[in-house]
Length: 219
Image (tube, rainbow, N blue to C red; front, side, top):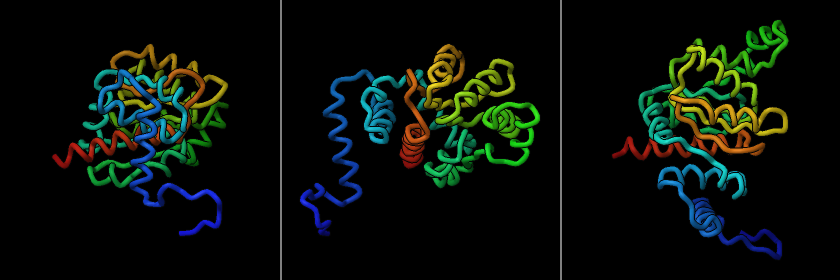
């Protein structure tokens, strides 16, 4: 393929693009303390963001990846705070094990209740999810209020996720919500430090865990 430009891509083969990208990431990242499976999650986060500072700030609690894999293979559901995560995730990988991915933020009942309480739809969507689903993976990449509400629900015994992927982005409460997650005990999580994050990197982490679940299922 000729792009009619001076620059020519190294390859247009999708698999080779991934391979080249991961090799560049490994070289530029250098030494790190992540385990083999943790690194598979972190390198996808870096791949999605091209941000090594973000990658180095990732915190994965012991057993978090294993908990996510077990949840997926058990057919538990995935709860997303925003539809971007729903769109970017490989839903078929959850569905073939009996689970699915849900996002309730655009539901009419959520919108009505949020207006009634003068609060965010993200908060109400977490309350709805906790009532509908036992366990599962909560993937939060956009709304700090969703993460803070999930933490509240956990502390009050109203929710007990198998895994939290909490990486909201922003200037208002994003870093602080992740600081609160770091204080949470008894629930495995994947998060990062600071304002950076977002739906894209949350999807990357979620997809990495689901790919590891697929690998385990094939063994």
